[in-house]
Image 1 (tube, rainbow, N blue to C red):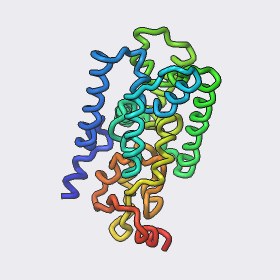
Image 2: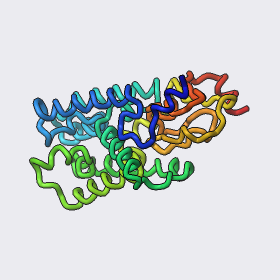
Image 3: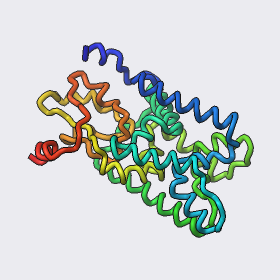
Image 4: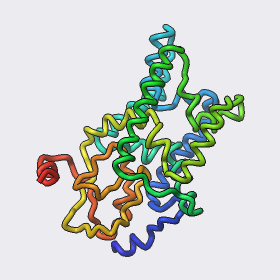
Length: 273
């Protein structure tokens, strides 16, 4: 059975490498597109952005008016609550921008233009860059009293550029991110996304973690397919805050060496022992 699963798992397949996840992702993409076409003006999609959970209260307080984008705040809150059970599932299963970057990353691999993997230590250190972006956005919002996050948001301009003139710097940045995503999968999600940075803080308290059974693993490295660049065989428990619960490593393993386990003292004992 494991061999059958593995033969179906192609590194060069564009999307649908893990069909269940891909179907769920496309389902939420369809919902997002439907909202843009029939309900929400493309220039106002920040109202359903999960980052509204931070930005909306800030702006409502500063400008003394009702700027509470309830839909975005609810999505943001649900994403954080879900992270307390599994690491960042919103990023791995729901976010339409993440789905786009998954597709671009797979396309880059298909075209064989993907870059060499970022070393594990560097990938983990560069994660902190997103916190710098988060701080800049929060301070910029406070000072300008405007929704400044949209100036660097690829999905906003992919939707709104048909109605608004895109600033030249923003156009260059968005194009750069889209092209780079074909070389480094989910580069925006790893090092820039501010909501991803926010949820990564809560993933430290996730009820379940990915556990590697060292008695089964033969270190074949077939599991090194993480879209967030995590070296999943780096330790007994995958503790990286990059983890988005996509399950790509689990699905690619021919030995079934990975499993989702509750964080318990037993796992901590094995990890430290």
